[in-house]
Image (cartoon, rainbow, N blue to C red; front, side):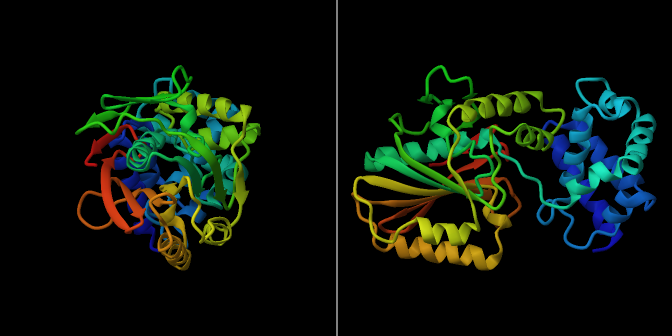
Length: 351
């Protein structure tokens, strides 16, 4: 890609961050896009990026923002740490002077953050997933077996450990230290119970919730301005560490074909779910997942249903906010349950 495409990717990410309530992170993205030069290893790698730098491709700006936030949190560069929230930021000139120096002097630290895609585990998206499970619970009256693709550290795999207010509906575990109450538009989801009988997840790089390095990696990818999101992540990590969710290291398509049996499983509603992960699977893997779900769904019964619950960027149209889509077998009908803010903070319910 051209240098112009790289600079545009940072400019676009700046707009996204600012609109999502992270003006500091947006500001750093904007400054990098406007002022970065090829001086130093990081500048050369970023401006000469081989691939698709945008947030819909390699998410290059978020890779670099994650590295800078991790470095600021580490305290290894006092001036950079002082630049970050909750400290008041100086004007653009002084802010860029610090960032520009760090990009050169801390190239060894930052380079590894450019090597792979951002890895998040946004707990706020559990609110949308729980709303989808409430729909299924009302329809079938069964307990659930969850299969999460791209599960990261598994914080959404254990979504029943959190408390929720979804419109007028209370759900989840009363008194949980993690409480999700997104801004809600539309009717409320059903008032019923969600019981998880089995759970499993897969990720190419699963993170151990008990490992301090995991906590720092996930925290670094939370935008530095969003202190509430960061606190929620830390509370969810604490909760998950008591009884870590089972997350396998594997390719999602390989794992699903091996784990989700074609034969019906009476007395349980099997749910394959994912949040902002499917779009990163290779096309061949996506096709295999769809084909396997169709094969399993063809044998689903009312007492042994299958559901596919997807929280992914909406395809087509101007509005690219994530859509919560639910496909249910028997029948294979797909319904759009909601349009959501990317981190689950706002849910426009249409279910």
